[in-house]
Length: 135
Image 1 (cartoon, helix red, strand yellow):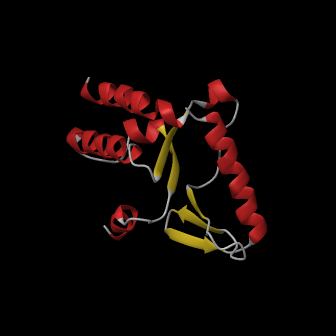
Image 2 (tube, rainbow, N blue to C red):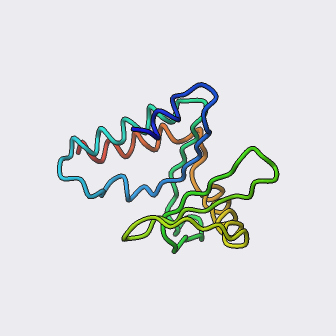
Image 3 (cartoon, rainbow, N blue to C red):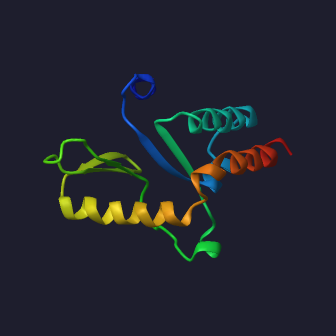
């Protein structure tokens, strides 16, 4: 809820996410209604000016497959403040302040975003995902 409040705030942070389509169609949720709500929330979020959502295309189409843990790259407006990396691991998140590692993940994110569906296609891709969930 705190993250949502930050994104809702005027002048709040910008968010750019690349999501795995399989994670949307086969998440660890028990009710199919929960999955639909999750997709609907993503559709709504993707319409906001401070949020960019992309859906990754299959690696068979792009030739790029990211093998690492999910991560968040924090970038700050202050030029002298380095990027920070958060790795989301099985037993919790780890903050990585090493500039070299953060740069490696920044490059991985760039490759992910370039190989994903364009932002303007997100709504259509999420509609397809919704269709597979409703049968």
